[in-house]
Length: 408
Image: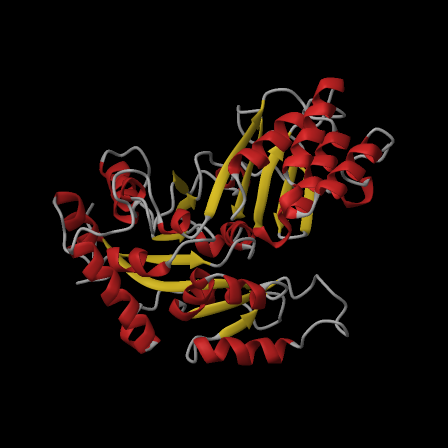
């Protein structure tokens, strides 16, 4: 790859459900961002976002599972080298920029160290190629104004994402509580400024927002982000040099150590909308604020050719229909990210409810009883009783919207 200068790399970060994929989709619709390569990192063993991000013929995309900040096999240098190799082999045309969408749980420090000169030593030919051909040009952080306060209070990664950003985009300012009931945006900005005093903060739905400005190549300088940022980068570098990086070869990660887990739920058969509604309600009752993220593609019995996209952030659930499956994989697949919830509990709820029979109802009662320590057995029992009487589908038709096929 012959270059006059290194290709700019922009990291798009933001906590779970902040709207990163939505921003990315809107950006890729712009002619100004033709010839963009996209790296999508997902936390878990199955990919969903790659089916929801629209990539046209002029762009290319690399997807990787396993958090970039924890998993050596999925590090950003590997993904960037894959892009380089694809161009070298003429498998794809050259591109002008790279955008990396991280998982909502990603700690920016180890990722930035991999693409910052002097951040981490080059380990071989791959790393030298990446250092020569790519440069970190910016870190954009999407902030969900409806959940940011609780997310920063409960999750250190969220606070670090805000601190490392050199451009901040406020999302979901057009949804949530009525303006009279919502904390003023100006107060949220003041809170953000206590963590990041320098980055521009722009409302995605404001007249001043422009993708060309937010994602413009500008040269990311860690020293300009403050002493905390420099300290975190130095700590990550020291840990890596001592061989104590987050992936220890056995699949461990900082997230698992903190009690955060990701679970993949798969179902080959179409799912009853009523059963899906019961599962979501019961999961919310069981997990409460410990349910960090729920997302998936669901084939419903009423119309299995038009999958339902489900996005959940804590108690807020948003969903819409696609006109067709975006790939050949037509299985229902959902990713559930929890904090301190037993993986078997979630899986048992899903497998039991999606095929609810007489025997399954008995199993659900036992599951509910097993959850009594969480104080939700009564809730589970009530939901089970009303499940058989329910007639409403998971989604009222008024909020199911057709959207363009993500693959164009």
